[in-house]
Image (tube, rainbow, N blue to C red; front, side):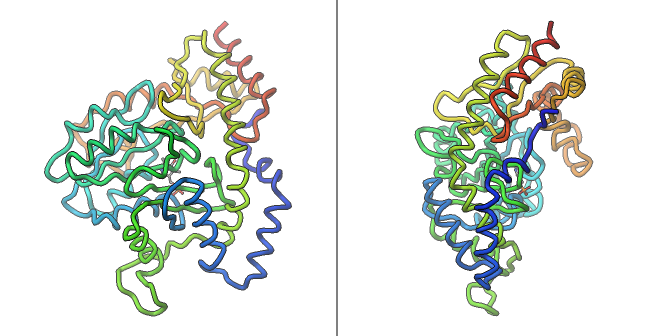
Length: 364
Ligand SMILES: *Cc1c(COP(=O)(O)O)cnc(C)c1O
């Protein structure tokens, strides 16, 4: 079986480095925040090209604390793509703001920038683009639009570690960028983890206070904060994995290149390469009619695949009653047609070619 994703064998490749990281933390005697977390924050900020990084417990918290730091709350509207993982929307709902969904470009799957402007009202506060699947959004246009209307830009970069746009890495453009280090992401911990990056010292400061009980000095609390600290053990693992991230992303690029070359003549919607940047290839998502049939074919030929995502957030039970009468046909269509082929640092060139053969025989 060629698995969709094999996080374990990727991890095992680094087992001695990870064991060293584990020992470092155990021997340090410092098990909450501390030096490993600060070092990871420094290294990740520098890798991304941002001035500051603040580690938090997970990607949802990064989005949530990011919105709080920007002062978003009840009465505010946040413009967000209609097709994303539900975390992006939950963060907005949890601060009491209104989700304003904008449909994606069906070719790139990321927010249609031309459609954003029509949705801006006097209550709009933030544009929240998602670099879905690792495809970088057009940050120049989004930033320009945000400036024109006095809005903040908070980016969901949970799937975009290593993507670039306009010659810079994702994570260095917007006001706040939210990251997840969920194990399956391009940069994944061995458990939960997350971070924000920013170039704004005041925002970084606010988030570092919010993640730690609203406290700057122990037992003195200046804000109604949270316990959302990046675990030092995860920070230590992430430092080791950051050292190989560029290499692992190159392996993803190699697999994507094979898929694009080999599958280009089939009646299959292939992902586009960004015109002005580099895809992070977190996922390799194709579009196909009768998606479930192809998925069954793959499994019966020992190739794993997944659907990202089968149900758009506005149709989830969790949002029942929020969007009655709303129709988002592009999201609905994408949810019916998308299929993610195996991709990741674990996948050999040979395996990628096998996947292509199995897909090709399906269409014969
Ligand atoms: C993974 C993911 C998140 C949430 O990250 P967690 O660390 O699981 O909380 C948010 N947004 C997107 C687009 C994601 O893929």
